[in-house]
Image (tube, rainbow, N blue to C red):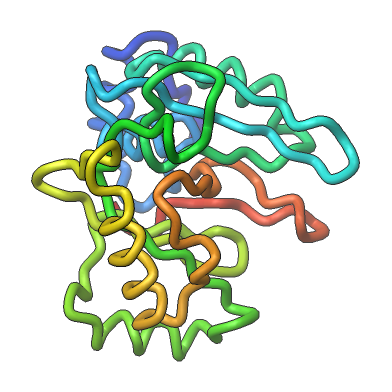
Amino acid sequence: MTHTWRTSTPADYEQAERDAIRRENEPLPGPVQRHWFLSRLFHIGDGWIELRALLPGTEPKRKFFAVGDFDGIEKFIELYSGDRNIYFGVAARRIKGDGSLTNCSVMRAFFGDIDFKITPETEARKRLAAFIYPNPTLRVRSGYGLHLYWVLSNPVDLQRNAADCKRRLVGMADALGGDTGSAEPAHILRLPGTLNFKYSPPREVTLEHF
């Protein structure tokens, strides 16, 4: 039986999440994954969520959304996800149009980006199990790697503590066998519920744990 997921309003996302819990053996639809994920990383008042749609050899598509504008985010993804890789800025942006560190407001989770081509999956999971914080709040399969997020009780103020935040991210990447080049507060990572077009056929980017 095919279930129709309603996603037109915030209330519908919440109902879809409740439906998903009852259907725990079914994969979560993309819009539900994204709503669940972004709701934990961004709160009203943080600023703007930056999305980028990237395809090698073409001009990047980029847009900023107010936190909570899930309909706008879904329209952007519907427009570009057919052949482009969809990324989001992990830290909220203070104003629209600028994805640099100087424009970042807060970051609500420390993160790690592990590429299985660099650190094989068995080794990566062994390192995670031995890590001082072995249970990330959110775990995303990126296509051939893991993106790990530890949601914080209090967000990092990047206008004041960007340098310390970067040191922490680099240290986490070193310990986990992650990409130290990605250990930067303004970094962009793949959005769950989209496709990784680096591979043929494309691979799904999915929430593995939430």
